[in-house]
Amino acid sequence: MILEIADFAIHPGQNAAFEEAIQRGVRTVIAHAKGFEGFKVNRCIENPQRYVLQIFWTTLEDHTVGFRESSAFTEWRAIVGPFFASAPVVQHFDLVDKSDALKG
Image (cartoon, rainbow, N blue to C red; front, top):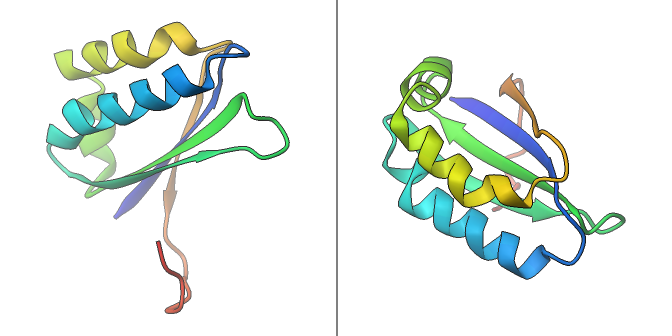
């Protein structure tokens, strides 16, 4: 499994609308992509305009080719892109180790 981490900075005062948009975008667009296995969205406590989206993919190519090169990516960006104060930083990770007690 591959973990995609997207780090977003949004325009001030847009939190509620962005949170609705990101959840809608993931559930109605990304969740239907081949290889999608789940997601988490977290808001930064110290900087409430910063969010981290974690998406779990079966393979790297499911995200970088299957999703990013599809019309669904354009649809996703149309939903969340207007909120971005700057371009998101997106990186991919392999699992090295985890705690069995980790929940959520």
